[in-house]
Image 1 (cartoon, rainbow, N blue to C red):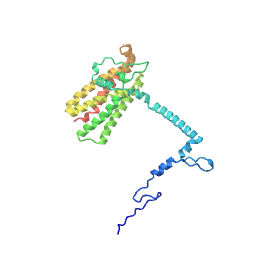
Image 2: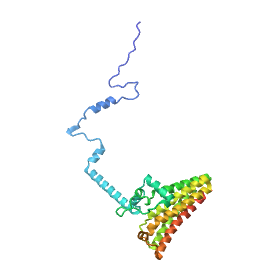
Image 3: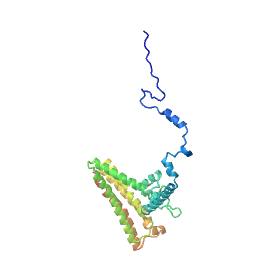
Image 4: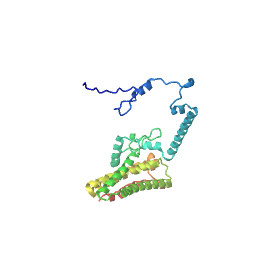
Length: 297
C-alpha cells in the first residue's frame, strides 16, 4: 500500500501564518503609503488629520501667539532691568574678566608686594581697563576662589583633628562672611563720616578685603604640614604682605588728591584719611589670625 502523503494546507491570501507571533503589517503600510488618498465625497478634500496644523492655520491663534511672544519679551526686559538695578551684573562681569597670567601675577603681588613699584590703575577713556590687562585692578575671582578654598581647607584641618562636623564647617564659613560684611559696612560708614570723595566702590572693598583669604590658606596649609612653627612663619609673612599691599593700594583711593598732587598729608581731614587707611590695613592681619588660629593644633 503506497505511503500516504501529508497534505500541507495552503494559506489563503487573507489569512495569517499560524506560526507567526506578530502580524506582518509592512506590506499593508507600504500599500497604504503608495496608494493615493481617496477624496472625500462631494468633491471636497479630506480634512487634515493633524490638529496642530488646524490650530496654526487659524488667524486668531497666530495673533495670540504673537501677543504671547511680545509679552514674554517685555517681561524679560523688565526682569533684566530690575536685576541690574539691585545686582549690577554688568559691573560684576568686569571683576571676573581675568586670565591665568593675571591670576599668577596677582598671587605673586599678594605674597611679594615689596618688589612692585607702579600701583596706579590704568584707565582707558575714563574707564578702568579689565583686570587681565592691569595687575593693579581689583577682581572678585581670586577672593571668591580663595574664600571657597579657605572653607575647604578649614574642613580638612578640622577633619585631621577629629573635630569635623557640617555645623562647625558652616559656622566657620558664616563667621568669615560676617566679618567681611562688618568690615565693608564699617569702612563705608567711616568714609561717609570723614567725607572722602573717592572712586572706591563697595565691590572694590569686597575685592580688596577678600585678598586676605589667600594668606590664610597658606598659613593653615603650612600648619597642617609643619605644625605651629610653619603656621606662624607663613602667616606672619602673609600678614606683613597684606598690610603693605593694602597701604599701597588704598592710599591711592582714600588719599587720591594728595597722592596725585604729591602734597604731604596735612590738615585734620587728611590725617583722618591716613588713619583710616592704616586702620583698614592693620585690621587684615588681626582677622587673618582670628579666623585661623583655632584650625592648627
